[in-house]
Length: 203
Image 1 (cartoon, rainbow, N blue to C red):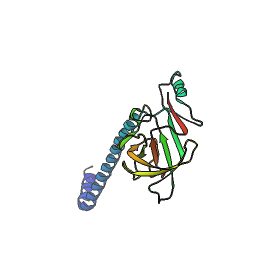
Image 2 (image 1 turned 45 degrees about the horizontal axis):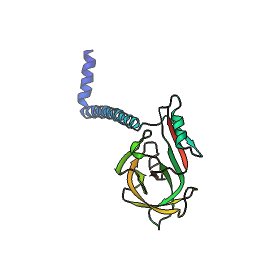
Image 3 (image 1 turned 120 degrees about the vertical axis):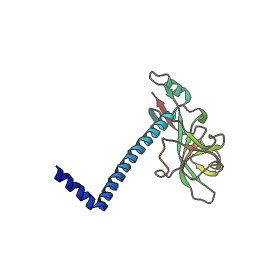
Image 4 (image 1 turned 90 degrees about the vertical axis):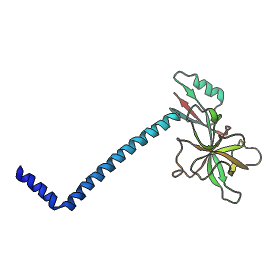
């Protein structure tokens, strides 16, 4: 054992440069692994807390034709149902930033009371919640409170001029929607029901 120990220490000492490189490589690798695992744990905790805070619906039903509030109330009275909330969705609209721009697809979402959401809660990043003749826009689309966009709504609920300017009064974050990098269609949030219904039910 003495000879083996002597040879090992002699090799390490005779090749100090390689020994230092090896030690540094191991240290950097261990540090990188530790930081990756730690960051992953921190991100996981943050994502889980943000998801729980949004009170996500356990069941979502998309209905067409839509149902009314009495029907929602009857669903809420069913055994095992804790909370029910309705959401209207209009995928058949177009938008543009100015009258000179080309039309592009948009997604219009409407909920009854943005100040008192029970399920799938939203986060107000800036400005105010959608109000009468004012809409919110999803974060990440280079739009902000105070901007004006033009909408073209093509469905049976619109009477008269189908092209109209709309003021944006807030920027909203919805955890259930695809990020802007994956979905180029900007979601616009409206305070009144429209045409197509998506009814989340929590049981």
